[in-house]
Image 1 (cartoon, rainbow, N blue to C red):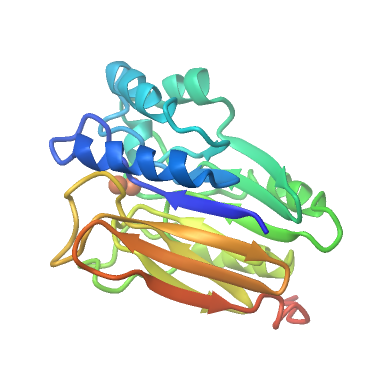
Image 2: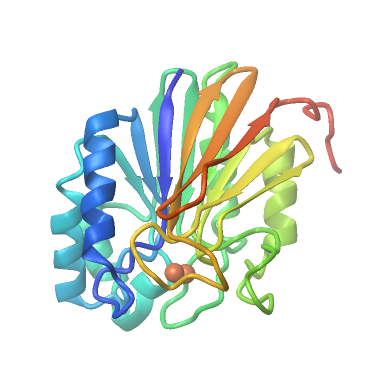
Length: 251
Ligand SMILES: [Fe+2]
Ligand SMILES: [Fe+2]
């Protein structure tokens, strides 16, 4: 049963960055040893080289495999050049026992808006087709695919969210992991579970929100999500039975 920690919006270099939160995150991860840590973008504040170097130094202290995708802040100032040099391809796949991950960059240089874009769809479809038989399929990107409540005025949802949701549903994706809004949330949509992670290591939260990250247990017949907060608030726990709507196919 793979355990995956879904961490997002660490924003190294931001005035909102709280080093003590990253120290605590590292301690928790290194003590609990998940099978994978997903970093769902906004590693840096402005995509600058020194911020990437600092983010890499923090991330290198995490003693677990990592799957990372860039966010809109990481693509500011042509920051995706540093991303590729330090973290590798912006589009990639990864296998754990029984789970198959596809991660795609939703950022555009110097824009806050997100987009996967139709030129990427063939790659995405090809990648999803290579999942092992019976494996859970997980899609990772930075921008949220559905509105997130408690996040202020809705904006920056993926520009092609409708087309992408259809593609993911038709390819039997079970789980989507996103970030960007700094607000943890979970939606169920057409048999998929869509999990938004909050900000793990900053105090740039909305309203009375708290920094947080998500702990996921991935089983073939059961996905458990725990939103874990830094502050006086117990975990939120969601249980989802995947594949109930696998027969749903849109033309
Ligand atoms: Fe962010
Ligand atoms: Fe973002």
